[in-house]
Image (cartoon, rainbow, N blue to C red; front, top):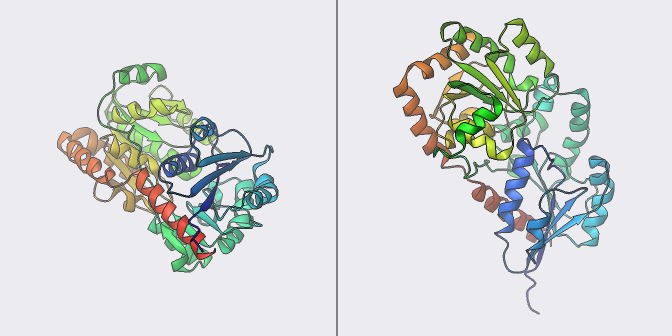
Amino acid sequence: MAEDNSMRIGADLSAIQAIKSGVDWYTHHVILNMMDMLGDGEELFLFSNRETGFEEEAARRPDVTIVRSGFRFQEPWRQFILPAMLKKYRIDVCFFTNFVSALASPCPTVITIHDLSFRLFPKTHSLRNVVWARSLVPMSTRRSVRLIADSNNTKLDLIRVMGVPSDKVEVIHLGASSEFSPDPGPDDGKVLEYFGIHWPYVLFVGTLEPRKNINLLIKGFDKVAATRPDIHLVLAGRRGWMAQAIFDELERRDLLGRVHITGYVPDEFLPPLYRQAEALVYPSLYEGFGLPPLEAMASGTPVVVSRNSSLPEVVGDAGLYINALSVDDVAGAMERILGDADLAQSLKEKGLKRAGQFKWENVARKTLVLLREVANENK
């Protein structure tokens, strides 16, 4: 009898929102690159409860199928509707990109755990998110055949905090898109005009929420601004939970004219924001990976990051490190980069070299290899 090399791989696309943050981009890039890597006899089925942006791309590919079973609420869809879809399409393995799997899945599952902030820093999340994660993530990790962690730090957290066996977790670092480059674009200046940003500026990119430690950044910037009347701070990202505290801090320090809050930045505007910045300052309290420092390095922008969690793993020797609880550390790092052109150039060169090690194609390839392994082991 001839050997059956066919394989039906499923993936949950429901993490992708219209306004994308880290997990959305992870899902987007990994799935998009996986589409180009399917082998003979392999089919990719992409499941969602609404439009995701992959429809047009998938329509041109005979080996990719989008299955949309409309349902407004994401988690009930995943837990009660998706399992029936996986059974109907005879899926051999299903990939979940956002912490939680379909617990009643009829096929083996692989799930990506990006961080354990809901356990380690619960006060930086809304009660709703903490309850959701603490209810479903432990069960998902137990029922999934393999787990993917964005970093060695997250793998160690899974072992230490949740008791996951080491051999169940595969570390697959994230990547930087080719759009992030030091090469200036013709419309770079127009992007600053669009947002009303004054140059020179230091930059923060990410959701405005407590875990990102933005109030510490504001306090550090206030110290720098006192002696450098030309410098500005740009906070680029959508408002998250408890963001009002950031606006209150700016008003209290009378910095509203020196700090620009862009709101959500469209995809095409982000690379110019990075490459025109004097530095990216990222004083986060905890990260499962930390895409903005990687994207900044790929853009030729010096980075300042906290010396905690996964950030040293991503940045290596290509950035300046700060204590995430020290205002003086943040201010001192900014002053060093702003006042030392040789240091800034050295960090730029090291950052570009470092960023070259992180590619989305590699993330997708390693993920696809793991999915094939799980499917073959469970046939």
